[in-house]
Amino acid sequence: MPAGKGRVLGSAGFTPAGTTRKERTARIKAARTAEADSRRALMGERKAAADAEQQARREASYLPASGEAGRQSLRAWRRLKIEAHRATSEVLSVAYPFLAEAGLGSEGTLIGRDSWSGAAFVYDPWVLYERGEVTNPNATLAGVIGRGKSTLAKSLATRSIAFGRRVYVPGDPKGEWTVVAKAVGGTAIELGTGNRLNPLDEGPRPAGIADGEWRTAVRQRRLALLVSLTEQSLGRALLPVEHTALGAALDHSVAGAEGRGEIPTLPLVVGRLLDPAGAHLGSTVEQLRDDGRQAGHGLGRLVFGDLAGLFDGPSTVGFDPDLPMVSLDLSHISGSDALIALVMTCASAWMEAALADPAGGQRWVIYDEAWRLMRAPALLARMQSQWKLSRALGIANLMIIHRLSDLDAVGDAGSGARNLALGLLADCSTRIIYAQERGEAEKTGAAIGLSRTEIDQLPDLDRGEGLWRIGERAFVVRHDCTPAELALFDTNARMIRRPPP
Image (cartoon, rainbow, N blue to C red; front, top):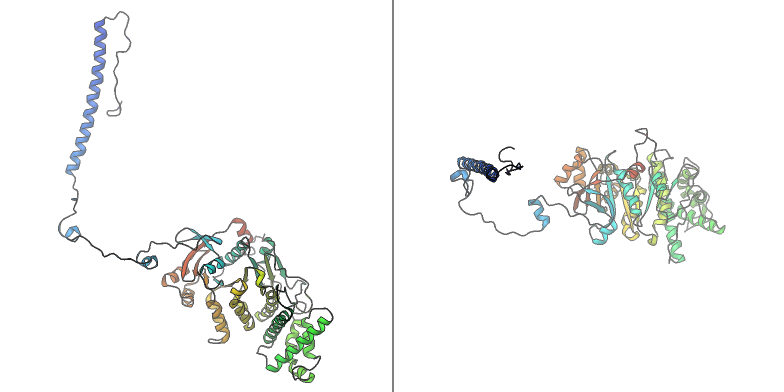
């Protein structure tokens, strides 16, 4: 056995029968002697090791307990004394950078993880508005292509359904929301495939509204739609006499259709613009015909032109506001932005009839590819009205764009359209910014008032990671998805030759 690794025990062992007592005693004594010698040797080895360790300590050089003397001590000769200071964690977080955000609480939709603290990140605009964290429920989502902003929007929408919210997508130019809507038990209304919408439908009537008040509200909505469509078609604002002619055509069309128990349609309005049924507000039939001629031909594009078959008759599909998700699929309609804007104006007006119901509950209204919509001043004005009424209607609008500089393409600098677009951004208490090019990061920071640290983060954000600016608070959040969600929200199927689910 190695030295110092064990203890030796001695014993006399087997003793033959003829051994004398003296011999047995000698054997026992020899065993005890061997045991004692081993014990003394072990203690000696331990004592030698301890002496060697103590000698090594005496020979080693250590700093004194009070530190080195003189200039090498790096200490003042007086004791350090600091004045007590009290401040909030918001102020001290600058001086003490190791504090992490506490988050937004646990009420709402789980988005992912806070990249700074590692904690779960939960977001719900209605909950935040109720707590006073935000002044409105609207949100902007910006990010370059391929960084996951569409996946975030779809995830936020579908997960909110579990909390009783419904989702409306007034226009889906690429058709990406169709499979999502059907997967959650909703529907996608695909235009350009034989379906037809009547933008002059009354829509669901809110409970408790009087007959006269309801008729006035419906007429105002129909007239505002017709003005928007006509101005877009003509590329200019309507003259006062054209407003009168359009109002007369609408009233005569409504009276004729209701007399037959029908709902007025655009062909009836166009017909009454080109061939008035009678005098109206001091204008004769001849004057109304002359005043409404250009407006009639402008609206005729929706009836006889390249948009014929979409909005020129009674609706062939219905809008069910109780479905969890309703999307208007415009992917089968090809054309310029002006054409898409006309279609969006009709389609969104048809859907807005349901949004006007205050008892409709809390709803997400998602404007995908919003940069295309904002190029139409009439659509932009409708969006602004919806933004302003979001709290009264109980809706949260989500505007999805590629970069905030897209707003610079709306109208001329200082124009009313540009101011409207910037107003939409200002009316969003939540700004979600995904990765931006370095040149765009500075513009983005200037547009929404980001700090220098936040601006520097934007170009380095990973895919699925975004800077969330909620009120005056900022978070870097990594969006987490389940495998089933990733398969459902996939927008790269054609690029990687994998069919969509």
